[in-house]
Amino acid sequence: MKKINQLVLKSFLGPFVMTFFICLFILLMQFLWKYVDDLVGKGLGWFLITKLMIFASATLVPLALPLALLLSSIMTFGNLAEQYELVACKSAGLSLQRVMRPLIIAAVLLSGAAFYFANNLLPIANFKMYSLLYDVRQQKPALYIKEGVFYNGIEGYIIRVGKKNPDGKTIQDVIIYDHTDGVGNNKMIMAESGTMVMSDDERFLILTLKKGSSYEEQYDSRQRTKSSRPFMRTEFDSETVRFDLSSFKMNRTDETLFKDNYQMLNLRQLENAEATIQSKIDKRKSELAGILYPLYVGSVKETKTKPDLSNPDFLKNFDEDKRPIIVSSAISAVRNYQSYAADAATDIQQRNKLLYRHQIEWHRKFSLSFACLILFFIGAPLGAIIRKGGLGMPVVVSIFFFVTYHIISITGEKFVREGFMAAYKGMWLSSAILFPLGVFLTYKATTDSSLFDTDSYLRFFRKLKNPFRK
Image (cartoon, rainbow, N blue to C red; front, side, top):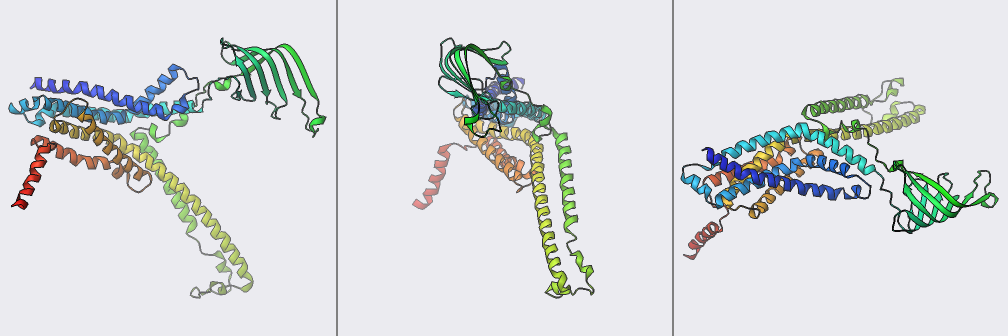
């Protein structure tokens, strides 16, 4: 019995590790394609990019793990069935459930590890990845001055270099516009040649200009016309201009600003956050009810006689000289109530959406683990039924079922976000639909059903034709 367990586990471990890292790599490439515009051209170091990729890979594990478990289980039992090892086990008196037992235990352990990862490690990975990605997206593009192009990346300056020598330092035909005063093109520097280097700490860009002129138009707010403003021209043989590049360095945002996001919380923190949000919603509703309840006009008590509420013309209950005041105050009160009610409804709606997102994350931590088990019980029987190993048919079948599972999951999650469905219904919708399918496939594989055998379906249709022929 131990040899059978070892055989099944060895047949499963290799495909699982391979498919897991392949799925993770594909999802990581999708992540890079999505954020490529935010990463390219900003002078990010390899250490920073590697750090971001590691955190992004950790956040993609919830998608890669169920797909890898589905694909590897189909490949494992497909190989065993294709090589007639399942037939040998059944001829020795071992049922399919007995052969699946070690992998069932492995799938349960992986589901437990998935829950631990989703509850303890995934919030930290989301916290690190999204805070770092936010800083990267806010980072300015790296300094890169092209020939013949006006460059305005340095705040307050516009630089044009006519030609750059192959050494990357010597430049010719240089024009610099200084806008630091905020009054337009009142300062300009022109030079025939020069050198462009970075300081040792890369904080400053140093331009040493040769044989040029500087032009400055003195600005005075009291002088309205340009013709009355003094103009100064200076020629130089050599001049050094420094540009501060501190804005090009990436500044890290305080990470505590992201710690209260629903994706960065574990189960206990999510429960506490949900309770806090729900209490604020209830408080807002009670305040709204307390303000809108006493809508009866208080000026009724000012009348000499008790008003006749059965009279359709309600204003006749009041003195004629007070009617315009009553109408004006009523309209003003209704407008105030309407504005307050609209603001309160918007606030409650936003808080409800935030509450739904917290509930989604709470259920997601459990649904991920259960999805691993369901997809295993779909993949293992399918492999025994289709009797094909390798990366051909198993990949096609697994992608079909995983896409089906993912579409149902996204649909249910969207319904929860919009408030059309309770969180426990939407987040467990895919599991509720695919669980009976897993039971059905396990039953068919146990009874040696020819579910994907085309000859059996042809024989069935031939039997239907025979009575009509007679």
